[in-house]
Image 1 (tube, rainbow, N blue to C red):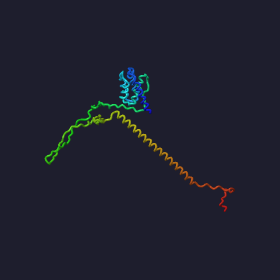
Image 2 (cartoon, rainbow, N blue to C red):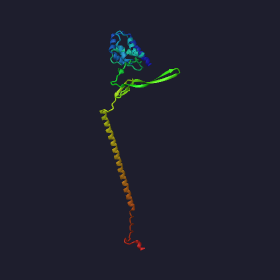
Image 3 (tube, helix red, strand yellow):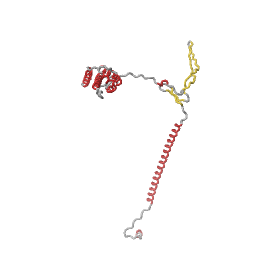
Image 4 (tube, rainbow, N blue to C red):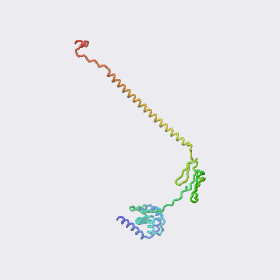
Length: 265
């Protein structure tokens, strides 16, 4: 029901403006505001729609504007809605009215695939000579058929080929073009500085780790020696307490301490 209402409204707008005669003011409005109206449209290719609206003749009718939306890739319903509102915009002279009515998928404008230009570096020539011509010797054999017998003769054949220069590092890119770099067997000044810095950091880190390990080992030995000394002192104290003579028995109450009780029996 909603879609039928929208369709009826859109065709009603077109019917309303189709009865009006073409006016130069309408064409001037479309020319002056073609970019704005195309950007506010809900469908089609904005660039193509803007170009078409800007080229509408002064005696253009509603069908010409409708054809612009259709050529830009809009569906039949979106074409009717967009054309009607664009014409209403120019008739009333309203600035900034919203033409973008969403709800239905607009038909995308299908453009032709772009033609890719040839790359400028297709004839790339390296700045240095990557390879050198070298003559190598290969063995070439031919077969000679004489009746039922077949003989084979081999002989050396020189052939010129390209070999990567010993002063370069050669490789090929994705297109098979030879590229190379100059080989540097001796490190540069920057490389030496970085290497020395990394070496100092490595040696310092290893030395610090060894020092901390030795310090921890000495601390563990000291704690273990203290513990053993404490155990030995405790054992000596317990042995001394066990070997001491028992204390004398206390004298009975009222007994002469100078008289030996065993001598009276």
